[in-house]
Image (cartoon, rainbow, N blue to C red; front, top):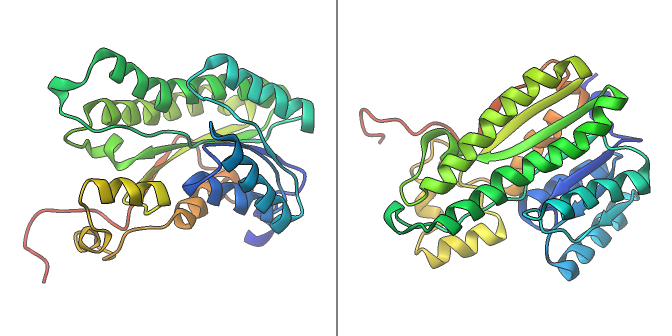
Length: 261
């Protein structure tokens, strides 16, 4: 039964960028479904508060590990701390990411590298380190969080679009190489998901969620919980024969043609 396949009792999950938004919603759901969860971000106070809320609501442990995912040594330490505390790692959600928009001609090399370090290299290092333990135990689920920018591109985000596209191909190749070890790797591409920080960014850019929603087939922006639903599915036994895939949680495709009434 599907309900039994969504039982994470005894499993251990790492969620990067887990203090807010999509990461927090994912960690919260995993813990409520039985997992012990490790969350990381750079802001220690915010992270500790999030971990306390998750622990209280779920009755399962949520460990806060302050981590700058752009720092390779810090990511290695994150995985080592997880295994030291819980003895294993079953699920890795590479959620940390982001960008600063700007026209291609003004993106400095340092800015390009920073976006790739945040969105791609961090996922690579975390996957490599967690993967050592997953290979040894012959099981694991890795979910990478991409964006519609990785599928269709976005003007003003050449670096971000390229990084998210790279993350999607990294997903496919990792799935192909590690399937023999019982490890599944999938990717969720976010559409217009109205997390608190995204809402702040939209406000700065003069974007209104209600107006943005009019261009989406479902006529609204999405929520972090709706992203978390897909991530948790990919992490669960319900997705036991799915790997190497990228699915968009985006409210539907934006198509040309006859204008909609």
